[in-house]
Amino acid sequence: MKASETKATLSFSNGGQNVELPIYKGTMGPDVIDIRKLYAQTGMFTYDPGFMSTASCESAITYIDGDKGELLYRGYPIEQLATNCDFLETCHLLLYGELPNGDQKKNFTKLVTNHTMVNEQMQFFLRGFRRDAHPMAIMTGLVGAMSAFYHDSTDINNPKHREIAAIRLIAKMPTLVAMAYKYTVGQPYMYPKNELSYAGNFLHMMFATPCEEYKVSPVLERALDRIFILHADHEQNASTSTVRLCGSSGTNPFAAIAAGVACLWGPAHGGANEAALNMLYDIQKAGGVEKIGEFIKQVKDKNSNVKLMGFGHRVYKNYDPRAKLMQETCREVLGELGLENDPLFKLAMALEKIALEDEYFVSRKLYPNVDFYSGIVQRAIGIPVPLFTAIFALARTVGWIAQLNEMIGDPDYKIGRPRQLFEGSAKRDVKPISQR
Ligand code: CMC
Image 1 (cartoon, rainbow, N blue to C red):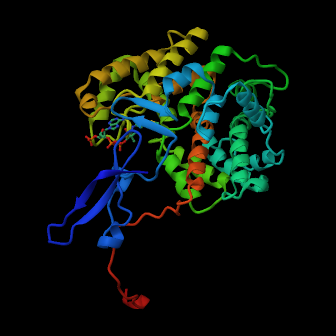
Image 2 (cartoon, protein in one colour; image 1 turned 30 degrees about the vertical axis):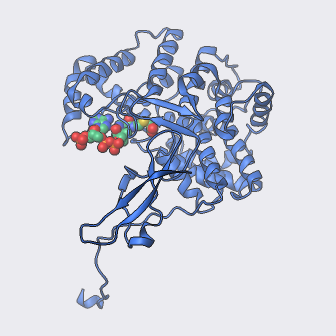
Image 3 (tube, rainbow, N blue to C red; image 1 turned 120 degrees about the horizontal axis):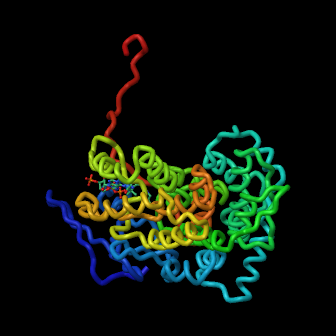
């Protein structure tokens, strides 16, 4: 960390002694005030529920400029990665810090594809679920269960174990998501085909059957690959922070990633793509474009609890750059499939236009996020709505692992242990039951 010459001074209105706090500068973004010694010096904690002003770690992986609407992985703009690279190159970048050259890409692809099959026993584990289980319930279970199948890569403090666990997780997530899908529709699982690309293989495992070959459409393959790239990492969001916190106890990588999957499921986070599409369906059912005004009214009513899903972001106070790329992919996919007049896409465009001009959204800097369009693309590809968040989890796995490895690799890392402002009862005595 680079210390700044400027220091922060904390003073107290009751005349308590001032405390000087160091300030550190990052490569970009706001400086941070180091409060690690605050408790020792003052006997006080800081209070910041929801981490509105707290940097929880140092990181060199992903940078977001929320005001500009800029997203960089290891310094590279997301637009350039989404246009010039594929998902496995992006994985290499996130994990090792650099884009691969030709040989490195070949070796990394070979390494990942060597691990695409899952232990055959996992299908029996899957069989314990109800057929109508939500795919995210299945994924939370399956990812956690990997620690029971791959004992040689569960020591989080061993860099070799972490490396193998990373490759296994990246390689096996598509297989597991496709298995969760096949299980719910009652079709046989399709084994991975390693001559296909990462995205192509996933489409094959999802849509091929033993009696019918599936021809991977290059447009859909590219669209899915782009979805994977756009979701690969997003700095210290809720699920990533969950993975870091869970991993900080020294638990195994599979357990830490399973915690991330569980966190991602929520509709305020990864579950928003499913919620956004369901919202569009509901407006469509109620009457479509003509009902947008009524819907927006509900969104603005604080008592209604209705949100415009796929809009707003804790960090972006501008158009989410991923949403722009997703909208472009959306047009491409709908064009390829002859769905240019898709009523849901038209409804989304109309809703976006109205929201972007409405004072409520403008004044709060609420713009479309990646989930606003990704659901439409996935639905057009043929992916069922409840699987959307599982696909987000598949793509985010590499980011979670890169962040987890960064934390564990830091010799100064400590178990995450926030403090609290206690507002419950002061100490009291237990009365005998007859007197309570
Ligand atoms: N619709 C209507 N009002 C909204 C929305 C929305 N989607 N998002 C925020 N607001 C309002 C909110 O009610 C508040 O208004 P007021 O100041 O009058 O009380 C104001 O905007 C600030 O919002 P906030 O809830 O304090 O913002 P936050 O940073 O805590 O929440 C968020 C961010 C993403 C949880 C929220 O915008 C939201 O719930 N959006 C819908 C869900 C969604 O699309 N989530 C996906 C996020 S992107 C994918 C990912 O990274 O996981």
